[in-house]
Length: 532
Image (cartoon, rainbow, N blue to C red; front, side, top):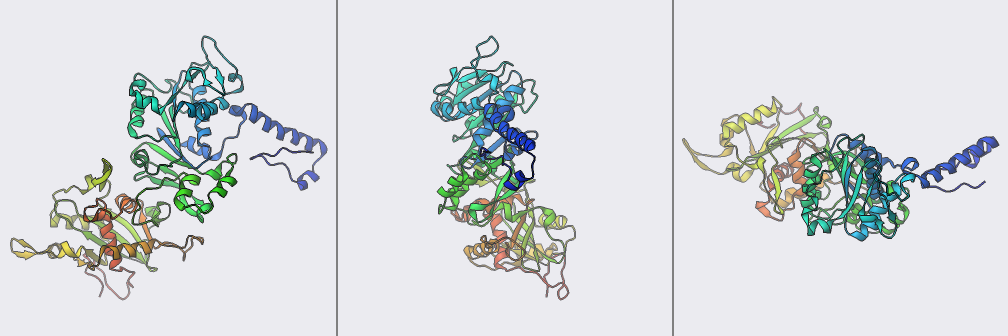
């Protein structure tokens, strides 16, 4: 008895066959091959939907946009095509745009995928008063569109058409007025343009409250569009990357700046994609190429100072920050006209840093913002007119009675002398008078502190992570400005770099070698006099 091989379905083993009755075996053989034949003849009704497709669809209940970043042959285009067809069928009188790079690519990839997912009865030519479907493999759909019997229309366009004439979108009301399923209005496949088209389409989707799908392999790295979706995005789920020695990589994220969900389609998740060949082709390739080609993870062209910082590893929920048998530190980076930056770090008995609080947080504003191709000071950095007493009151209020073992401050600005009403003073002295006792951080070179931080983040990625083999640096996901700083800081702009201040407080702690203190042998105070 011959069983056809299949990427998902598995024939019974010889042992299983040996205990089956002949009638039972014949029935199973027929059902097995009927399932394969039906999936090939009518994939819309009987085809195999992959688990990562379903996960992305589930998020459409909550968000307006899905960004599917996929490795090569990860099934992202097939998922986009299936979603478009289902939306057109279940949502009457939909108007859906599908964009591709060129007419040739549209016909060869996007239009053929949409045709393949049409129900069997819609694959024959239809030219009635209510429907028009005419397709050939060579030319795609006649007039680059099709109209289904329920009045839904799928229209294929190219990015060059928009670039040559942006008015092609004028008057379009995308989606359906009466949806019964996810109301998808546009699908952008292999999108490599800037944000202009995406921003324009958002207004065309608003009238019918429709949704957008964006699918591509991020071969161009950290583009403006990717930055808009991923800056400050929170990780919902991570997976181990077998081609990167099981390094954790993001699998699902939620965008901070857009009502969008980001899904990473891994090449290995598509059993129809030839993963073994992709794996072979990536042997010996760089980490960056593997991230892009196998996992859909975009890579920044300019290296940051913290290549080991991984939001899937080093960023943890606030509930996971230990609260017992720890030593708490407050680190302060004062400034002139702009806001001071401060953070609070708990150190456990193993010397692990847990950054659990920052000020200003994103509730005050982002410390830096991307504008005109560079980072500049954001709302969070803009001074609020606070004086020494205001900062002292803020610190005490934020801490709510916590025992702070020691407070560190920028050794240069903190100790700088200035003329006060009653004589020469300094920030350190005035803070002390306000009940906040600080000590200057060691005045070492910037790179010294950065190297210590990098060392705290290091662990042997060739071995499983456990209580011994793990980073010794974690950040609460509530500290979003610090997370962004660690992800973006390059050091290339020196003292003027927008993300420098959040990094400064971390390196002060690092060069001071803050550590766990035995509370039975030292005393601590809320004001932070230190242990002696």
